[in-house]
Image 1 (tube, rainbow, N blue to C red):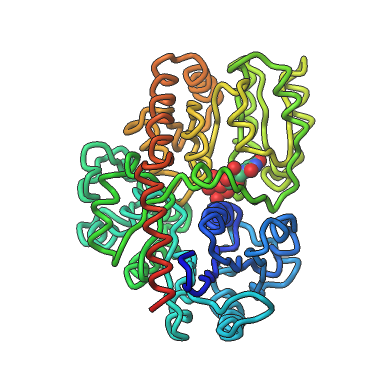
Image 2: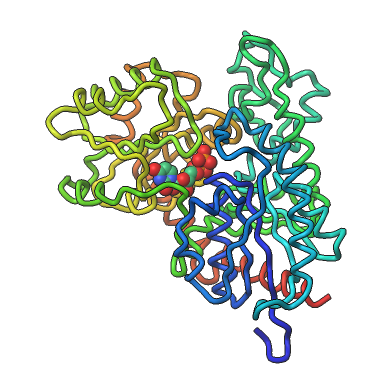
Length: 464
Ligand code: UDP
């Protein structure tokens, strides 16, 4: 902080789901490191779940919450995302406006609010802030390539390429997402571009996400958790649509020194000792993120493929991920101590462990970046949103893994896991990519330089 300059107080407001909370807490850690005051805004429901250790992490960090408007017993699962969006826009936004208004004066040692960084999936949060005279930035927690795909949807619709009819040739190339002409196929577009398999209806999320993406252009700037060296072309194509763009990722690697606990689930650290007992690069780590739900049939194919590949595996299997309780099935199938199941793993530590040889992932953006930074080859089995396009980049552009998109058959799982564990070429690409991204987040690298520029930008906005 320059002498004489008023302290800067930023309110950070993520979409209330784990992946979004993680990257925005990493941003928070970075901003705290730069001397700023942060109010981190959860929903009441999530604040009850988080590790309160965060609150004690810094006297300049304060956790607050607003209601999400849903009843306590609402599942808040991925199938109910529309309910959550609706209730946040109504009940949540009223409480948010009142909270912001109350933060416009110095209170209890915390300086007056000077800036908001809100998730791009909460456009009301930037609108309300600006209406109250508080400058607001949008943070999209997904990849730049996915954001560019959403920006391109109006043109894809005009050309009749989207929505993709049921039964259409999914391997057909897509020509008008700029910079991706050579490799993007229909199946790699965000899942909401496809018509519903049974009802043949357009996915209502498509329109929502396209309009939210367009809305980000009104924010003072767009922040992306990506690195220039990973997504240079997509960033260049996004920039003309936005007032300013900051590519400051992978944020978990930038803010590693001041990391804050991020989990809504209780992490099971016991798996670290289990990993210690394994040889280097001998274990497959399996995690499909915080939201994915799979059928019993998919579970059985995945499990059979893993067992067939013959390697020990550690599976982070949330209790709500498969309908029936599958733990016994895994322990029986992965006999001889070859399988370890936890509800929720300390994923970044797991990926960093020498025993992990590959990562079977749903290609959520945080998981993808975490795998990239550790140089671990990925087997991607994407489900929805940006996962489809992320996995295409892994398989075809970055070459740090393989893409199992739209298939879940035991023979394919077995083959892909073996390839990720055994291919020298994949491992070399994964390690080269890790080196490249580590240069981005090192002092003087593109992401760190952009992060410093972001801090100055926020300070300037706060002064004006
Ligand atoms: N994660 C974790 N332990 C687990 C599973 C996931 O810590 O057992 C973390 C993971 O490190 C990542 C986040 O949860 O940071 C999941 O975010 P991602 O964007 O990959 O997927 P989403 O959950 O949003 O689908």
